[in-house]
Length: 324
Image (tube, rainbow, N blue to C red):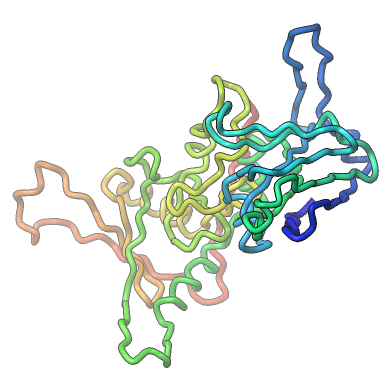
């Protein structure tokens, strides 16, 4: 169920959403516990769960909704298919957490009822929304293969976007600052020292820098080693934007940059590149400690790489890695 605004003038509201037969067959099943034991839920890549979230929703945009903090306002009462919803509040969990609806979901139509039981909260509920979210599970290898096979943005497309940005003219500005080049950092923000092997970022990220896919996936917080990661940990480490696996793109230009730096033996000497408005780029080589006192004239100048002729697509090799 997509985010639905809470009508603060209506004390009783009903929301409906449908679960298809295919989706219902994939719902994670729980083992009925003995008295006093916590239920055990069995999940794999085919299983899905459902959860309920409440957040202040300035827009219906999915990415912005998912980045909003979950909060349970006071004075709400909810039930799903005639079963009471027990809120997971900050007092007991450190922060307000989404509610698991999986045990109460049924095939076909599902009914979520909301009641505002405190009249003094009506105004405070303005701008808040509810959504039922479907959560799936994927292994690191599955995510990686999906990115490499379906989410690579060609190098020419990336370079064209950068050159268009550098050559853009805004006639509405009285004072215009024109940049002939931009600097792009190549280092993964998690390691702080490695150039990204598979450079990715969120599809809506406003920056040109990327982070390494493998490092990003391995560093997602989880309860214990080899367990599934937490759900709400998919934010871009650079801009804090939406970086869920299905929203990641692979930067084909930075893949090309890494390959050419490797050919030149500059991977360990480069942290950034300078991209010129004509489409060429050159590495900003890092000086070794024993070279810092030498004359700049004795240093080898980094090679500038020109864009390929129009219509010639650069070849990107996709390596199909074996499963663990």
